[in-house]
Picture (cartoon, rainbow, N blue to C red):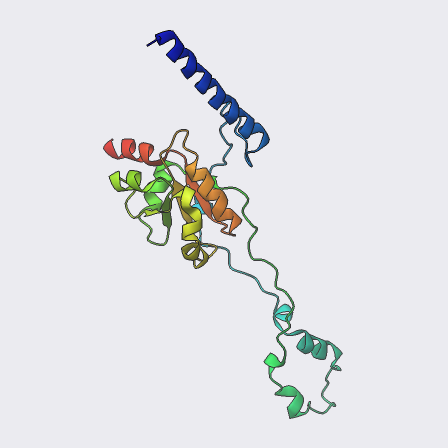
Length: 217
């Protein structure tokens, strides 16, 4: 057997595969990969953003009434001591006669990217049962070890978990992590959660590796 011929054929196969991969990445992939890894810029989460209760909506009382009721109130003449009381039929008419309502302003601004949390903040959040920790890694990695209380939600299988995600309140604090370092799974999961309207999403960039190291100290 000609060894040189074997290596030559292997080189052709590798070069062909690399060429097809490069062609797909730049011309067919929906999200092309860059040649050089550029870490994302993530702002640091403040303690007030992490531990303060979610902002309460400040509804305008006039905007909560049906359109018909608001129109009636604005058209009603001013009452003075000499005017007769309004008829009971007008006073006692139920508000829910129509389902059309004036829209209420949003209580919180939509989040566009996650905020970073450090180990000390994660440690404090892990003791709060109202905070949801999500592990974005594969199931076998999760089974080998994870942050206590964290639930598995593999980023690459996000669609399978949509029924669970939809039922969560959008202002719930969610901390996402993966293996740390160059791992992109936590970023992908955060992007999906934010796209679903969650506005308190945080990312632990150190991930499982940082957690393990700090726990040993």
